Image 1: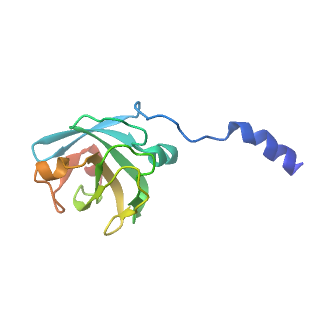
Image 2 (image 1 turned 135 degrees about the vertical axis):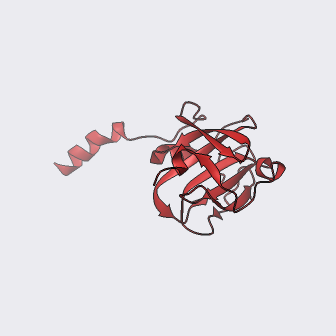
Image 3 (image 1 turned 90 degrees about the vertical axis):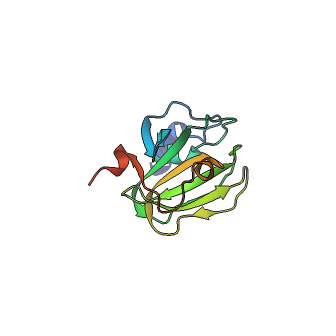
Length: 145
């Protein structure tokens, strides 16, 4: 009986996404006077797909990954075509550390301490704006107590 139930469940299992996810909920964030239009990757499948398969992304856009609880977060760039920088962000919006990531690599890029948020932007965006570890981001996710 258990085998029959397992076989019935197979067709409904989620499959890996082949194209970019472009229709996620968005949130407006700020870094000083700079505005960021961020897609929000909240569900496990959304976080797993992230910015994979994207061929371009406007300079003021990014993706905010939201996890259930603070933990050491590690990211890689499998199937990701754009060079990105990951900002590992504490609950209060403070950037803990920044990591530049090369496209289509399996190198692991991790937070320096447990965080709940990771913001990916085009590589060089943070540097061009003078945004470093210790900078505080603003926006709805970071104003919750």
